[in-house]
Amino acid sequence: MMQKVLAAQVPTDPPAGPGQAGAPLLSVRGLVKRYGGAEVVRQLDFDILPGECHGIIGPNGAGKTTTIRLCLGLAAPDAGRIELMGLPVPAQAPSARMRVGVVTQFDSLDPDFTVRENLMVYGRYFGMSEAQTRQRIPALLQFAALEHKADARIQELSEGMKRRLSLARALIHDPALIFLDEPTTGLDPQARHLMWDRLKGLLQQGKSILLTTHFMDEAERLCARVLVLDHGRRLDEDTPLALIQRHVEPRVIEVYGALVEQAQALATPLAERVERSGDTLFAYAHAPDAVLEALQALGDGVRVLHRPANLEDVFLKLTGRQLRD
Image 1 (cartoon, helix red, strand yellow):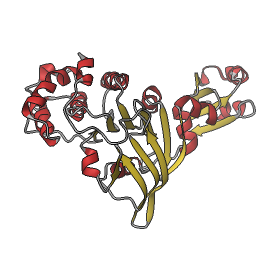
Image 2 (cartoon, helix red, strand yellow; image 1 turned 45 degrees about the horizontal axis):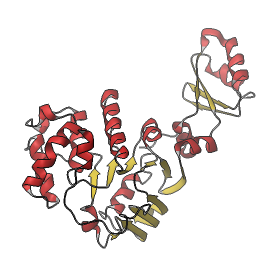
Image 3 (cartoon, rainbow, N blue to C red; image 1 turned 90 degrees about the vertical axis):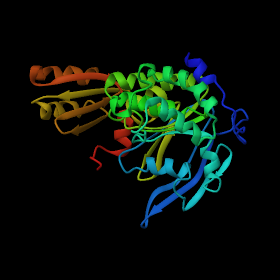
Image 4 (spheres, rainbow, N blue to C red; image 1 turned 180 degrees about the vertical axis):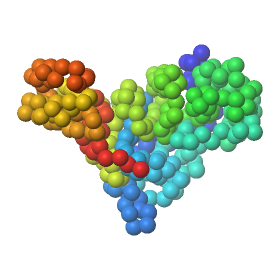
């Protein structure tokens, strides 16, 4: 049934430009945004290609949500060029937004309506007839695993249900591109994995996704390419694997415990790079055996986790370990 949801076509005007194979659905060049004299987006370039999930990761205040607002024409850039679905933004932003789906960081579901009614109302926003919307709703409810909650009020839903409903609502008009701003924030592991499953299904059906997230495992699982953003500036962009290979050593040894100071002294001359965060030591190495052997001398005074490097290691190396509020 999921294939029926995603393949169902709602009669709309065909998109200009990106209907051609390989043409970007979103193209951003030289994007600049200033607030109160501070440059919060700095000369940003990126594309979203058909059928890919493109991630934007960065600390709080890096400019992720501002970038999405600019791409949707909800804020005006101070410089640069944006084309969304082949249309210039912000000049033709309303028309461009009619051709994409958006799931915001905070739910905007109407608490006065049921699950089904939220979908019905949203269909009207996109000029769909009642018959068209009703035809889409059963499959969308199944896609969101909410068939049993179709007549429930929003207050009766869990956070995971609300996020799935927000995603289903964004698909009501069958958009080719979906903007997802931190879609799994606040969800428990089961709900996050179910959301990931649904997003993978969308990608398998040829949809494109622009994803901002604070979960590095989420970006690593879903994204074909990841843009690392900090202070509004592009630090790097590539596949998750390429970013890991380029920026960090392949093996990581995490050390916790009462003897972490002694562990740091032992690991520092043997690892390529050693970092300390609170009571945790991170030793990065190409050949970790020497480090692991040295740490054995500390016995039960430390706990050791040996793992492959991941996207979170890249994130912390490029943006730092300082807390961002």
